[in-house]
Image (cartoon, rainbow, N blue to C red; front, side, top):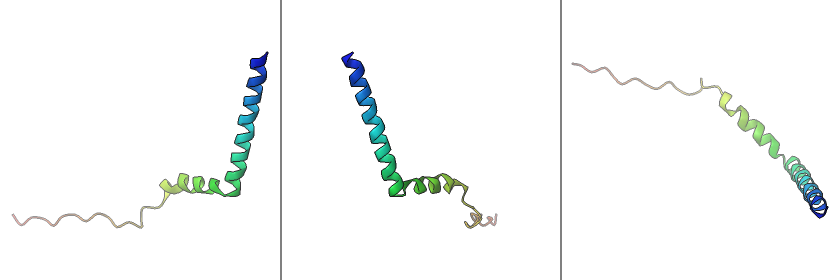
Length: 59
C-alpha cells in the first residue's frame, strides 16, 4: 500500500511540473519558435542564384 501512495505522489509531481513548464513556455513564447523552425524547410529557393557552370575548354 505504501508503494501505491508513493506512486500517486510522484505522478502528481510529474503532472504539476509539466503544467508549470508548459505555462513557462507559453509565457515566454517558445512555442512560436518551434512553428517557425518547422516551416523553415519550405522556404522558397528561387532567391538563391543557380550554380554557375565552368567555362568550356578550348580543346
